[in-house]
Image: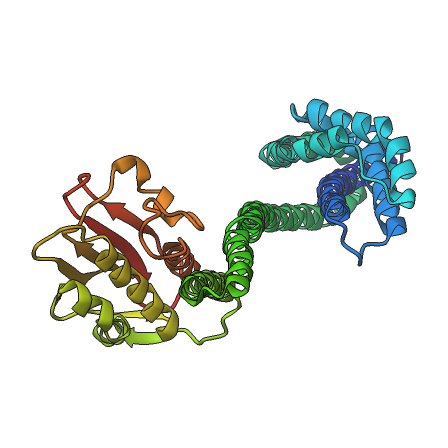
Length: 458
């Protein structure tokens, strides 16, 4: 009877240890996923708070702050987190998070309800935890084998106790042998459940890895958007400069010659009045052209024109018609390559690209006796490589990037507002392409090269 009781206890112990090992591993997995998830939610809320998102409620942000703190506390002091403490990065990621939220709890809870900005050191340190947390998650799953080894050790110890008990039972009674067989079947069921649990853990690991990759992709896109926003802010500064400087210049001209006009009127000098009126008219024309170019530039991102498959020769033909007067005035020979491919772009905007590039080439021919503009394109996989070249005055290498800047004019004597090439660059980049200049220097001509998509994005 004693041996039979020992055998029953051995089987019970084996089952208990197996279930406990499974429960501990699942609880540890939940802690890791919950910790990382709550961190990213709070990170997103903090970012929304710094940019003044009106839909974010201060109470929600503070509640999320407390939720993250509770997850960190479980990671450090929870009983089921014991297997995770074998992971090396646990000692850096989790205590660092605990120290940070404790240190900045009062400034955060003081600033948010009052609508004040959060301390910059806290924001930088909080976002700096992202990489250690990701590394902690990776190390956790790479060391899941430790949890499996614990399970196997528990099962092995229980199995040894079972064999010893079985030997004593066989000596004492055949009835106990039958009980052992029944318990062995139960053990087999436990092992099968353990195997299924391991398989499920592997699936959870794969799903978590995919989630980590997805979040890394989202973070990369967020950083890209922030850089794009910074570029847009710089452009807005350019707008402000133009309004305060370039627009004021013709206004000063109008104001000055209006005074001269009054004096001419008093003196009855009609010839001088006519000259002053011409100066005023030129200033008004300059201001009108500048305002039109600024408005056109702003419409590049607001345009709702549909993107479609179009033939380049058709677009180039329309662009040449629009600048035909300039071509005739400069007696330019325009040469278009044969068998041009088609591209995937908005027709009106692409016409504007070629119109600006051809017009720009005619303006900078200099004293070239036989001005020539060459236009062509070739297919390169998913992209089309296009070019508009001339044999004009060329450009020094140090100015190649400046010509695309907003309101940039290298030659102030040439007509224009310095917006045309900026529009070209924005249109091409909005389609995912690139544009650059090839030139060997002054007197060697220039070649604008750019890429356009050959087909819709996958």
